[in-house]
Amino acid sequence: MIRSLCVAGCLQVLAMSPAIGQQRPTWKVVGDTTGSPRGCSAAAGIEAISAWFSAFNNVDSVGLARATPPGGEHFGVFSTGRFVPTEPFVRIESLPELVRYARSRAGHHERMSLTGVRFYRWRNRVLGFMPYFERSADDLGVMPLNGIGKAGYLCNKGILILNLAPRPAYDPGL
Image 1: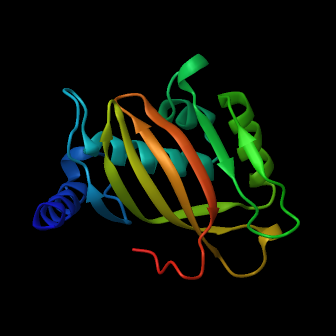
Image 2 (image 1 turned 135 degrees about the vertical axis):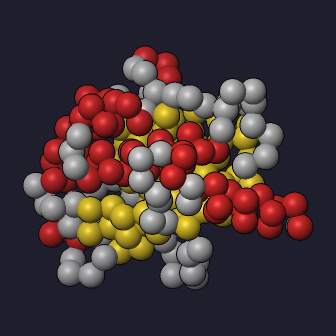
Image 3 (image 1 turned 90 degrees about the horizontal axis):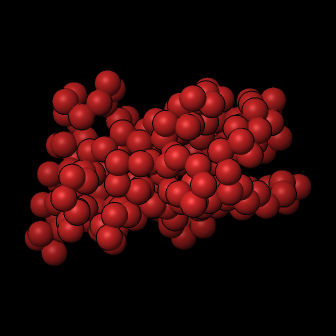
């Protein structure tokens, strides 16, 4: 218990350090980042998470390419559940599909703003994490909707898996 609190506290300090990236995250960082393989860091994961959400919001295809592993077997998957009944379930398995989806959502003024990330240890070369975020768009209603996800950052490659869904009312967030 004390160890995980220290990891979370130490990680929060690390996340606020300007040395890890160009901008400080404006979102809360907690959880367990122990067990990193040689050459891998949670700081790089934090940068990739920030970069992915920023690139998606800005429909930046180059940014999305940099924030996700190179094509082929390493791309992984992006999915999102239904935030409103009229929204379709989305599952994407390639960068071109992801860029097309981001462009289509930009037409609805889509915004996903991270509020926090909980990390769940390294497993081999993947750091598991759960993003907490607010999602808004013209076709989702007038109020931002709370979201949650299950995701993984592949060491020095980018966001491998990002599955998003509405956050249940019983989950207060971070």
